Image (cartoon, rainbow, N blue to C red):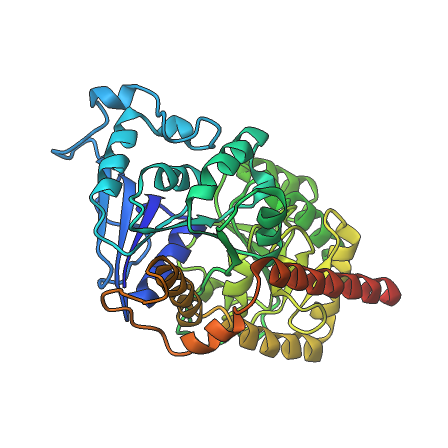
Length: 435
């Protein structure tokens, strides 16, 4: 099977880039896979990409490059195909419209996978019908503006599938967009084995990692840790990441006199070796479309204390087993959950062992098997169930996944959502009883 990914800029740092690289590398073990980056702003990707996966670009933003496109006449005109309501619209132009359209027209692949709504719109409008057209959603339907949701409702029926990172978001797409004939599936992001020893969970450090952005609510985490410090001044918080909230967070640390207890560590890649130096991961977000840092922490055996925010944490963490879920914006609950793991070495290590097992569920080979199965089913459907595809190899376990996916998508999605809601309700009831 020949699979082509279309991504905004593969040369930066971000969760979409990481998970695309992880998935592409796993798929490349049995398929022909490429990544096409709309933009290129540096000589080499910041993140490591498997040499088996070719990477090419459509628009060159390197000013010293002989192929620099920044002054191209078409680059000065606004994009038309890329939706104006998409957050990245200002970075796109008539030049990207032309280059992406030409790329899709001559695409030599069995399937093309877009990685953000604007690129999915290009695929819906410009990819040949002979190619299976798949949209990935790395945010959530609710994070998009009304204008963008209306555009997606108009364009996405032309696709073959929409893949979200959580079943809750898949259910939202099924219920709120009219997508006849389009398969909507929740498939989580993948995180590879970091290849390092699991955390010993003896270090007196809580870690947090992610963009220093408003949605992460790190102010709440710092205020919660102020309460932790009052009881356990021997513990500290290490906050990894960069972003526009760094200065305001540093001021809050100073205001609360937490300078010796909260350290702004800056951005680090890879993050797993730093996580392994800690004993608990803290997530204070108001919204997580998935929760890559949660799985990254689990892959080194860290239990997680996270807000039970939409949509990812509640589908990853099993409360009381591999982590603890607390209500968003509740600094008292966050502090109490952190202290529960700080003060109970046995519980912390028991949950850490369970987290290590849970992290393995997101191994790229397992997730690649889900993609292989779905893409093959879509190709078989297009070929009249004859499966006339060159080199349509399957990952081990693909047939079992096919059986697991049998049945009506809407019914399955509703059942999964019901189980998720029941699990969250049970967790909240247990937490309420424990207070």
